[in-house]
Amino acid sequence: MTCLPFYIPAEKKLKIVIAGGGYAGITALVIFLRHMPDASITIIDPRSQHIKITHLHETFRYPLQDILLPFSTLEKRFHCRHICAELALEESTLLQWQNDKFMTIQDEIIEFDYLLVATGVNSNQGNQTKKTKNTLNLNDFLDTAGSDLLNNYLTKNNKDEHCISVVGGGATSIQFLFEISHFLRRQKIKSKLRLINGEDRVLKQFPESLSRYIETRMDEMDIDFYPNTYYKEQRANTILLEEKGLKKEFSLPSALSLLFLGKQSKNLLSANTFGQVIVNQQALQSIFTAGDCSVYHAYGSNTMTAQSAVRKGKLAAHNILRNSGILKLLEPYLHCDLGYVVSLGPTDAVGWLGLEGNSIGGTAALLIKEMVESQYDLLLAGIDTYRL
Ligand SMILES: Cc1cc2nc3c(=O)[nH]c(=O)nc-3n(C[C@H](O)[C@H](O)[C@H](O)COP(=O)(O)OP(=O)(O)OC[C@H]3O[C@@H](n4cnc5c(N)ncnc54)[C@H](O)[C@@H]3O)c2cc1C
Image (cartoon, rainbow, N blue to C red; front, top):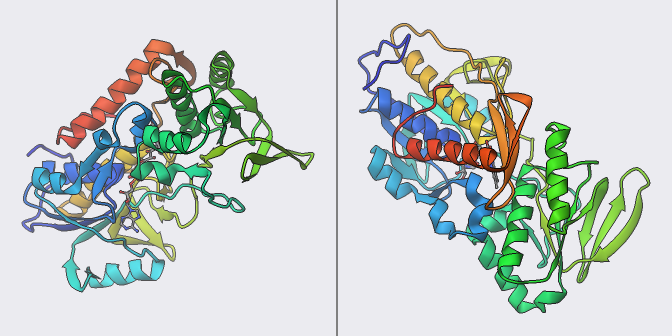
């Protein structure tokens, strides 16, 4: 057991419920067990496996199995319990749980001293976008490897005549785009690939130098780029698009659309600077939140990234322990983004490090991405190397 500043444990062995076993939830689990090995911890998650989702686009190269960690393995490794269920999280329910300190799941009463809500967010499916048999979105890749999904689709249809459209100019979309481009080359499939983006450049939230690097690589890989263009609909063999501003509709040949339209920002939980959920302007003393589903009213970063999710998970766990201890001195959330790297297939990446203007590309960026992923792998083995 290691020392946590401002934490003098009280006698009580804590009962903790973690809703959501993603990046934030699992980080908190590791931290609890590090400082209170005899805590009784229950993870509630509707999935049977933790997904290392930051590798999802790599399933065009590796089996999906490589990025799944069954909760049954985590139960054994960390002596916790997993209940396969989806919690309905409404403000009234949170208030009730804060008062009752128990919840009922599948007719079982689960008591807790603290609840950590780390349920992430759903990907955006778009307002008008209909899911058809020739559209894929992020959820499809959670069940089947990218290579299998695309192979299944291409073998059912005449593969060389295809145009494949990738929609969205964010990091997820770009990572999938380059993996697909490399996959098609490896498989010697001549399908044409294009990117549709509603903004004038890719990765609009990042410095322009990153967008230029990516757009040059797209050009080299013969990927067509349609900036300032909105996706309307994928039809039988065409995609319906709209020019931004002019509102002029047009269509292009397209057999398949992959939609990566960002994350939904509804039903997020407000939290104070210590990670305690705020309902009706009151901080709930026993209910904390972390990860994509949380917005901290604090100096620290609220970006919907694994980086922030891990830092919030760690802070929330520390503050739950401190709140249960004798001093009850909590730590504010101050984490600033350290950088961000977007992978561009197996051999290239681009991003920034330290300061947003400090761009990195190629091998250096790839190495940093691998280091960051290894750090999370260590955490899953119970070793916390996150210092910042
Ligand atoms: C392809 C891809 C690549 C990415 N690459 C990067 C990257 O390189 N760097 C980076 O920083 N970020 C990256 N991200 C973003 C990052 O993965 C997310 O920000 C991070 O996973 C958020 O962690 P979380 O714990 O909040 O949510 P998640 O990891 O999404 O976990 C949420 C968990 O909650 C469970 N859950 C959902 N609803 C309920 C409910 N009602 N009750 C109980 N459980 C529930 C879910 O089943 C899930 O297990 C990437 C995302 C994608 C999709």
